[in-house]
Image 1: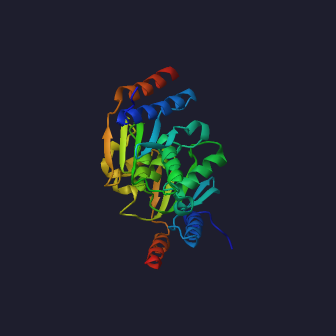
Image 2 (image 1 turned 60 degrees about the vertical axis):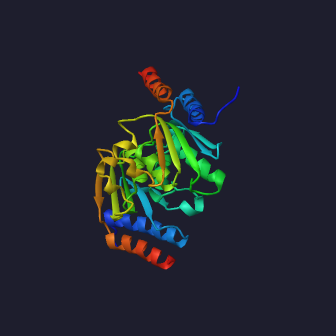
Image 3 (image 1 turned 120 degrees about the horizontal axis):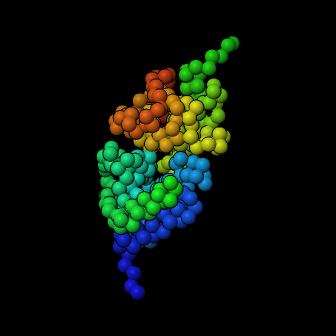
Length: 147
Length: 147
Protein backbone atom coordinates (compact mmCIF):
# COMPACT_ATOMS: atom_id res chain seq x y z
CA UNK A 1 0.00 0.00 0.00
CA UNK A 2 1.31 3.41 -0.89
CA UNK A 3 1.31 5.80 2.07
CA UNK A 4 1.03 9.45 1.32
CA UNK A 5 2.55 11.83 3.82
CA UNK A 6 -0.24 14.34 3.96
CA UNK A 7 -1.96 16.12 6.83
CA UNK A 8 -4.33 13.20 7.39
CA UNK A 9 -1.40 10.79 7.66
CA UNK A 10 0.32 12.84 10.36
CA UNK A 11 -2.95 13.50 12.17
CA UNK A 12 -3.44 9.73 12.37
CA UNK A 13 -0.07 9.57 14.13
CA UNK A 14 -1.27 12.24 16.56
CA UNK A 15 -4.47 10.20 17.06
CA UNK A 16 -2.36 7.16 17.94
CA UNK A 17 -0.70 9.28 20.64
CA UNK A 18 -4.12 10.39 21.89
CA UNK A 19 -5.27 6.76 22.15
CA UNK A 20 -2.13 5.98 24.14
CA UNK A 21 -3.09 8.77 26.56
CA UNK A 22 -6.62 7.36 26.88
CA UNK A 23 -5.24 3.90 27.65
CA UNK A 24 -3.33 5.47 30.56
CA UNK A 25 -6.41 7.26 31.90
CA UNK A 26 -5.21 10.62 30.60
CA UNK A 27 -7.39 13.03 28.63
CA UNK A 28 -6.90 11.76 25.05
CA UNK A 29 -4.95 14.46 23.27
CA UNK A 30 -1.96 13.59 21.11
CA UNK A 31 0.56 15.54 19.06
CA UNK A 32 3.43 15.00 16.66
CA UNK A 33 6.01 17.44 15.30
CA UNK A 34 6.97 17.00 11.66
CA UNK A 35 10.01 18.44 9.93
CA UNK A 36 10.51 17.84 6.20
CA UNK A 37 7.93 15.04 6.15
CA UNK A 38 9.54 13.25 9.07
CA UNK A 39 8.13 12.89 12.60
CA UNK A 40 10.80 14.24 14.95
CA UNK A 41 8.76 14.23 18.17
CA UNK A 42 5.61 12.76 19.67
CA UNK A 43 3.68 13.59 22.81
CA UNK A 44 0.46 12.88 24.58
CA UNK A 45 -1.26 14.35 27.57
CA UNK A 46 0.42 13.24 30.83
CA UNK A 47 -0.94 15.70 33.36
CA UNK A 48 -2.10 12.94 35.73
CA UNK A 49 0.98 10.72 35.57
CA UNK A 50 3.40 13.63 35.93
CA UNK A 51 1.15 15.56 38.33
CA UNK A 52 1.84 18.62 36.21
CA UNK A 53 -0.74 20.90 34.61
CA UNK A 54 1.78 21.88 31.92
CA UNK A 55 2.24 18.30 30.66
CA UNK A 56 -0.02 18.76 27.64
CA UNK A 57 0.66 16.82 24.43
CA UNK A 58 1.84 19.96 22.61
CA UNK A 59 4.30 21.02 25.33
CA UNK A 60 5.81 17.54 25.53
CA UNK A 61 6.10 17.25 21.74
CA UNK A 62 7.52 20.77 21.42
CA UNK A 63 10.18 20.19 24.10
CA UNK A 64 11.10 16.82 22.55
CA UNK A 65 11.37 18.47 19.12
CA UNK A 66 13.66 21.19 20.50
CA UNK A 67 15.85 18.51 22.07
CA UNK A 68 15.97 16.62 18.77
CA UNK A 69 16.84 19.73 16.76
CA UNK A 70 19.21 21.24 19.32
CA UNK A 71 17.27 24.43 18.66
CA UNK A 72 14.38 25.83 20.62
CA UNK A 73 12.74 27.31 17.51
CA UNK A 74 10.53 25.14 15.31
CA UNK A 75 10.96 27.31 12.23
CA UNK A 76 10.57 24.46 9.71
CA UNK A 77 8.13 22.37 11.69
CA UNK A 78 4.46 21.54 11.65
CA UNK A 79 2.79 20.55 14.91
CA UNK A 80 -0.21 18.24 14.51
CA UNK A 81 -2.51 17.97 17.51
CA UNK A 82 -5.85 16.22 17.84
CA UNK A 83 -7.50 19.05 19.80
CA UNK A 84 -7.42 22.83 19.51
CA UNK A 85 -4.55 23.99 21.74
CA UNK A 86 -5.31 25.87 24.97
CA UNK A 87 -3.87 29.39 25.47
CA UNK A 88 -0.88 27.96 27.40
CA UNK A 89 0.05 25.70 24.49
CA UNK A 90 -0.68 28.39 21.89
CA UNK A 91 1.65 30.70 23.82
CA UNK A 92 4.38 28.05 23.93
CA UNK A 93 4.01 27.38 20.20
CA UNK A 94 4.25 31.13 19.62
CA UNK A 95 7.53 31.38 21.55
CA UNK A 96 8.86 28.46 19.48
CA UNK A 97 7.89 30.34 16.29
CA UNK A 98 6.28 27.14 15.03
CA UNK A 99 5.95 27.35 11.24
CA UNK A 100 2.58 25.59 11.02
CA UNK A 101 -0.06 24.24 13.38
CA UNK A 102 -2.73 21.74 12.33
CA UNK A 103 -5.41 20.70 14.78
CA UNK A 104 -8.30 18.26 14.53
CA UNK A 105 -11.26 18.94 16.81
CA UNK A 106 -12.25 22.35 18.12
CA UNK A 107 -12.39 23.16 21.83
CA UNK A 108 -14.85 25.99 22.18
CA UNK A 109 -14.55 26.13 25.96
CA UNK A 110 -10.81 25.85 26.56
CA UNK A 111 -9.23 26.46 23.16
CA UNK A 112 -7.08 29.48 22.31
CA UNK A 113 -9.32 30.63 19.45
CA UNK A 114 -11.60 32.41 21.93
CA UNK A 115 -8.72 34.88 22.28
CA UNK A 116 -7.92 34.94 18.59
CA UNK A 117 -4.97 34.06 16.41
CA UNK A 118 -2.96 36.86 17.98
CA UNK A 119 -1.91 34.31 20.61
CA UNK A 120 0.16 32.60 17.89
CA UNK A 121 3.33 33.89 16.25
CA UNK A 122 2.42 36.17 13.31
CA UNK A 123 4.33 33.90 10.91
CA UNK A 124 2.57 30.69 12.02
CA UNK A 125 0.23 29.11 9.47
CA UNK A 126 -2.86 27.54 10.95
CA UNK A 127 -5.16 24.79 9.73
CA UNK A 128 -7.89 22.85 11.50
CA UNK A 129 -10.64 20.29 11.06
CA UNK A 130 -8.29 17.54 9.78
CA UNK A 131 -9.90 14.22 10.86
CA UNK A 132 -12.20 16.34 12.98
CA UNK A 133 -14.76 13.63 13.74
CA UNK A 134 -12.23 11.00 14.85
CA UNK A 135 -10.45 13.53 17.05
CA UNK A 136 -13.70 14.79 18.58
CA UNK A 137 -15.16 11.32 19.15
CA UNK A 138 -12.09 10.26 21.09
CA UNK A 139 -12.72 13.11 23.54
CA UNK A 140 -16.48 12.56 23.78
CA UNK A 141 -16.03 8.82 24.28
CA UNK A 142 -13.45 9.34 27.01
CA UNK A 143 -15.61 11.66 29.06
CA UNK A 144 -18.73 9.50 28.58
CA UNK A 145 -16.84 6.49 29.96
CA UNK A 146 -15.75 8.45 33.00
CA UNK A 147 -19.27 9.39 34.00
CA UNK B 1 15.68 43.46 62.41
CA UNK B 2 12.12 42.34 62.20
CA UNK B 3 11.21 40.94 58.81
CA UNK B 4 7.64 41.22 57.74
CA UNK B 5 6.33 38.62 55.36
CA UNK B 6 4.46 40.92 53.07
CA UNK B 7 4.20 41.16 49.29
CA UNK B 8 7.35 43.29 49.08
CA UNK B 9 9.31 40.68 51.06
CA UNK B 10 8.34 37.87 48.72
CA UNK B 11 8.85 40.02 45.63
CA UNK B 12 12.40 40.65 46.84
CA UNK B 13 12.89 36.89 46.85
CA UNK B 14 11.60 36.76 43.28
CA UNK B 15 14.01 39.60 42.43
CA UNK B 16 16.89 37.54 43.82
CA UNK B 17 15.87 34.76 41.41
CA UNK B 18 15.75 37.26 38.54
CA UNK B 19 19.29 38.45 39.37
CA UNK B 20 20.45 34.85 39.35
CA UNK B 21 19.01 34.51 35.84
CA UNK B 22 20.83 37.67 34.73
CA UNK B 23 24.12 36.33 36.09
CA UNK B 24 23.65 33.30 33.84
CA UNK B 25 22.93 35.38 30.77
CA UNK B 26 19.22 34.61 30.92
CA UNK B 27 16.48 37.23 30.64
CA UNK B 28 16.12 38.36 34.28
CA UNK B 29 12.73 37.14 35.39
CA UNK B 30 12.29 35.38 38.72
CA UNK B 31 9.40 33.81 40.60
CA UNK B 32 8.58 32.25 43.95
CA UNK B 33 5.53 30.31 45.08
CA UNK B 34 4.33 30.98 48.60
CA UNK B 35 1.98 28.86 50.66
CA UNK B 36 0.94 29.98 54.15
CA UNK B 37 3.78 32.53 54.32
CA UNK B 38 6.40 29.98 53.32
CA UNK B 39 8.30 29.84 50.03
CA UNK B 40 7.73 26.36 48.65
CA UNK B 41 9.28 26.85 45.20
CA UNK B 42 11.58 29.19 43.30
CA UNK B 43 12.33 29.57 39.63
CA UNK B 44 14.07 31.82 37.17
CA UNK B 45 14.16 32.01 33.44
CA UNK B 46 16.29 29.22 31.92
CA UNK B 47 15.24 29.23 28.27
CA UNK B 48 18.85 29.49 27.03
CA UNK B 49 20.44 26.92 29.33
CA UNK B 50 17.67 24.38 28.83
CA UNK B 51 17.16 25.27 25.15
CA UNK B 52 13.45 25.32 25.89
CA UNK B 53 11.01 28.15 25.20
CA UNK B 54 8.75 26.92 27.98
CA UNK B 55 11.42 27.29 30.71
CA UNK B 56 10.04 30.56 32.05
CA UNK B 57 10.42 31.42 35.75
CA UNK B 58 6.70 30.88 36.39
CA UNK B 59 6.56 27.44 34.74
CA UNK B 60 9.62 26.24 36.64
CA UNK B 61 8.30 27.57 39.97
CA UNK B 62 4.82 26.17 39.33
CA UNK B 63 6.13 22.70 38.47
CA UNK B 64 8.44 22.73 41.50
CA UNK B 65 5.54 23.80 43.73
CA UNK B 66 3.36 20.96 42.40
CA UNK B 67 6.18 18.50 43.13
CA UNK B 68 6.53 19.90 46.64
CA UNK B 69 2.81 19.74 47.34
CA UNK B 70 2.21 16.42 45.57
CA UNK B 71 -0.74 18.21 44.01
CA UNK B 72 -0.89 19.93 40.67
CA UNK B 73 -3.30 22.59 41.91
CA UNK B 74 -1.97 25.66 43.71
CA UNK B 75 -5.24 26.39 45.49
CA UNK B 76 -3.63 27.99 48.56
CA UNK B 77 -0.65 29.53 46.83
CA UNK B 78 0.52 32.95 45.71
CA UNK B 79 2.92 33.17 42.80
CA UNK B 80 5.19 36.22 42.87
CA UNK B 81 6.92 37.08 39.61
CA UNK B 82 9.03 40.09 38.71
CA UNK B 83 7.45 40.56 35.26
CA UNK B 84 3.88 40.36 33.97
CA UNK B 85 3.43 36.75 32.83
CA UNK B 86 3.12 35.95 29.11
CA UNK B 87 -0.03 34.19 27.83
CA UNK B 88 1.70 30.79 28.07
CA UNK B 89 2.46 31.31 31.75
CA UNK B 90 -0.95 32.86 32.45
CA UNK B 91 -2.51 29.79 30.87
CA UNK B 92 -0.39 27.45 32.99
CA UNK B 93 -1.26 29.40 36.16
CA UNK B 94 -4.92 29.14 35.16
CA UNK B 95 -4.73 25.35 34.81
CA UNK B 96 -3.09 25.23 38.26
CA UNK B 97 -5.98 27.28 39.68
CA UNK B 98 -3.40 29.49 41.38
CA UNK B 99 -5.10 31.34 44.23
CA UNK B 100 -3.22 34.61 43.77
CA UNK B 101 -0.72 36.13 41.34
CA UNK B 102 1.43 39.17 42.16
CA UNK B 103 3.67 40.64 39.50
CA UNK B 104 6.12 43.55 39.55
CA UNK B 105 6.77 45.23 36.20
CA UNK B 106 4.31 45.35 33.33
CA UNK B 107 5.11 43.87 29.91
CA UNK B 108 2.95 45.74 27.44
CA UNK B 109 4.32 43.88 24.42
CA UNK B 110 4.41 40.27 25.57
CA UNK B 111 2.28 40.22 28.73
CA UNK B 112 -1.03 38.40 29.06
CA UNK B 113 -2.98 41.53 29.98
CA UNK B 114 -3.34 42.43 26.29
CA UNK B 115 -5.76 39.50 26.17
CA UNK B 116 -7.40 40.31 29.46
CA UNK B 117 -7.83 38.62 32.80
CA UNK B 118 -9.96 35.93 31.17
CA UNK B 119 -6.69 34.07 30.54
CA UNK B 120 -6.49 33.46 34.30
CA UNK B 121 -8.69 31.18 36.38
CA UNK B 122 -11.84 33.06 37.44
CA UNK B 123 -10.98 32.48 41.12
CA UNK B 124 -7.42 33.84 40.84
CA UNK B 125 -6.75 37.13 42.63
CA UNK B 126 -4.37 39.45 40.81
CA UNK B 127 -2.11 42.23 42.01
CA UNK B 128 0.69 44.10 40.27
CA UNK B 129 3.13 46.96 40.58
CA UNK B 130 4.84 45.59 43.72
CA UNK B 131 8.49 46.83 43.58
CA UNK B 132 7.68 47.88 40.03
CA UNK B 133 10.74 50.07 39.50
CA UNK B 134 13.28 47.51 40.71
CA UNK B 135 11.67 44.78 38.60
CA UNK B 136 11.53 47.00 35.51
CA UNK B 137 15.09 48.35 35.91
CA UNK B 138 16.48 44.84 36.02
CA UNK B 139 14.96 44.17 32.59
CA UNK B 140 15.99 47.52 31.09
CA UNK B 141 19.54 47.18 32.41
CA UNK B 142 19.88 43.66 31.05
CA UNK B 143 18.84 44.61 27.52
CA UNK B 144 20.98 47.78 27.56
CA UNK B 145 24.05 45.71 28.46
CA UNK B 146 23.38 43.31 25.62
CA UNK B 147 23.37 46.02 22.95
